[in-house]
Length: 414
Image (cartoon, rainbow, N blue to C red; front, side):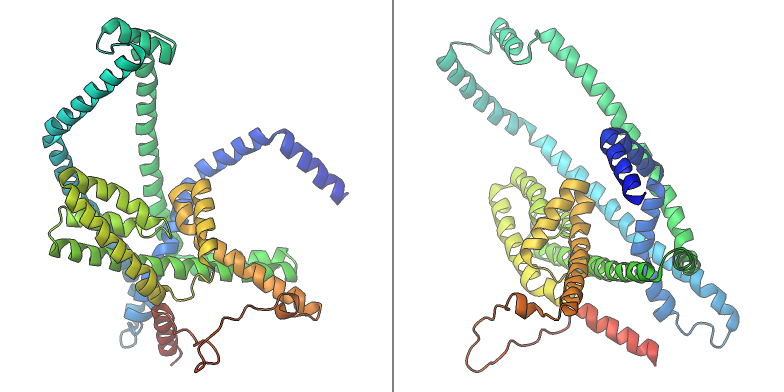
């Protein structure tokens, strides 16, 4: 009966696959504020715990009534500091962006002159090649008809017809996204303030309605994902803040234009592993290219040096072995995550893949142990040649996150 039911559901899924995805999309749209709230609560849980468990740890020892203030005060400070930083960055970005646009507008006559010269050369080339003079209205109209299948009037009408609905839908999308984020912030406050009770209720329901083997495995999976994703995101945020600050200091010393705007863009895109520095460097280089090509070239050299420092020294020092996967799998996870979910997928693809990698590796070790085998029995480990004075590779130093976690745990235990 189970096989028949499973087969029936599978056939139904493939027959009505479009309807199934439509229903899933509707569910996702309805639950978007809740998902945003979960993401915000998960990220703000770290500063919230830092205030509650460490900064205000001894609050209420002399005056018990202060214990009631510890949780709301920690929540207030966590949200105030994080959203204050976001508001500061946005407030500083807008004037910088406005100044960049003003500079671009001021340089329009020079760009127009260069484009007109290039256009004249292109028109002469097409005239010599095909005999068409694009400056002749009739020939231009004929060219539009050849390319678009309609005359110029119909072509303009189609543009207006398509652009206006698209702009209207874009405005509606921005409004809906803003509404979802506002509701998500409110939901995140409720989640953080009552997370202990919600986790306890979830565990009770799972343990009560599932077999022991299932819920133990489920809790193990949750623990691995929480450890990999949480430590990676926190470490990456710290790393990106340091890189953004170093970029601002370097650009200010070398007197580049728009150091604050460029540093914020570099710092934000640095959150994305592997491709983030490249994505952030493209628009900032173009911005400087508009002002001075030599300055843009110097900026490219500066960014390459900065990213080499981040990739070889700062990043490993902060993150340590948090990821635990090779560069090849990092690149694959970023590409797949970005293709499926955009920028959030590029950021979260690495820790999610690292968690899956860890679970698969542990499962493989467990199954080999049942078969009374080891990994070296199946595939011998590749041992690199080391100098004669070292018989084995040196153990890697713990990352700054590992040291901080050990310090906090020791203090908490004492």
